[in-house]
Image (cartoon, rainbow, N blue to C red; front, side, top):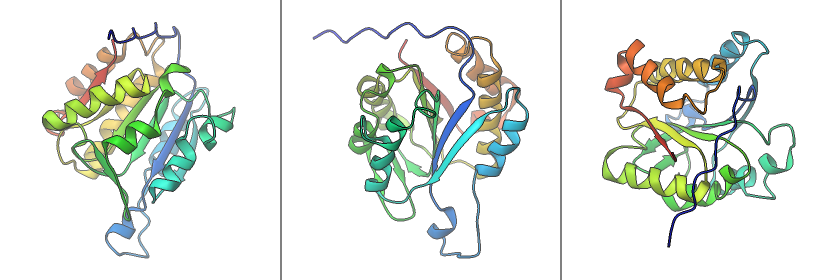
Length: 214
């Protein structure tokens, strides 16, 4: 059976919207008074763009809660017309090849593919796995290929190594600043990725990677 061809990307700037689902990092380390989050970094990024980046952020801990947001047709992200055309879905969790983990649960390849089934067939978007080693090795590559086929998304972005929290955050911010600031980001996605590797040396060590459908 022939695979369906990827649709042509939309030309022009991407909508200034980002959806972030994040684990409670401190719960994993049993530190109730700690409150690490990527949210303040995104608020700083938002102020660098004109018009500003709009950020929807939720903490997620269980597979059921995750699917309540992403489920095609009935999930909040499909029901809310303001968030529906967000080009970037940023998943900030613990990770391993093909898998993300909250402080309480694990979402493996099958659940992640199901969660984003058909997402990219509605409009251009990418899923950003801001987690350790999700794209590592043969398992990570197979997951990326399967995820792109099942989801129809334009790309997956992530890492092939265990990452330092701050270095990966700076890598993410640099990529996202250039993505949202680019006049035609879908056409220039690989060039944006390469520019981050060129300008920020730690991105190489972290295995900063993009897989695309085209």
